[in-house]
Length: 265
Image (cartoon, rainbow, N blue to C red; front, side):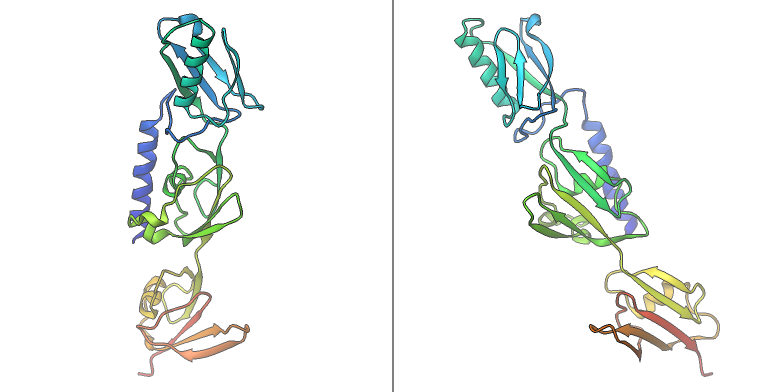
């Protein structure tokens, strides 16, 4: 998949996220409230029982008439049920219509690191997947970003994410992320090309890149260059360097040094 298409996918996701953002939302039903979250509580017909409340470090809130309530670990719907029940048990309001909306999501966050536009920590606002976080982080860096990322779970397990498959819509590469997780977009592998090419230098190694494509990345052959006389310098598993001829359809590997010689004719 082209780099441009990847950026278009992320741009569309980012715009959708912005369009969906509001001052107060219920959030995903599976989002569990935590310390730092700011919530708006209202009771239909009782304006004195409306309040914006920040969940304390101990996980509690204080609500008029009722007093302290343990809110951490509850969904907004569960908290609505608890407040309604407490108002009934205290003989304050029968059949209260309570609404809880999330104003600020601050209790759950994920780190996005490596080759992205805006690395840093991002707050979760309901069910959030890898692709959502990459969109928030400005997408994969155009020149330095590779085709893989690593999702490191808070518990220590990890999963390699195939970014090409992710952008093609493979749901298995787009798992839900959770509080404390880290997404690290790996740096793209590089190769080097010099000799009879228009722009010698280091270039991003695309997946399954052939010698012919590598020469194209280097601006193409000079008038004297010959693809059939290309040589590659490559290190083996022990770090020893070897030189060999390479043909146009052969695959270039990470850190290869390709030398294009002059034509014999």
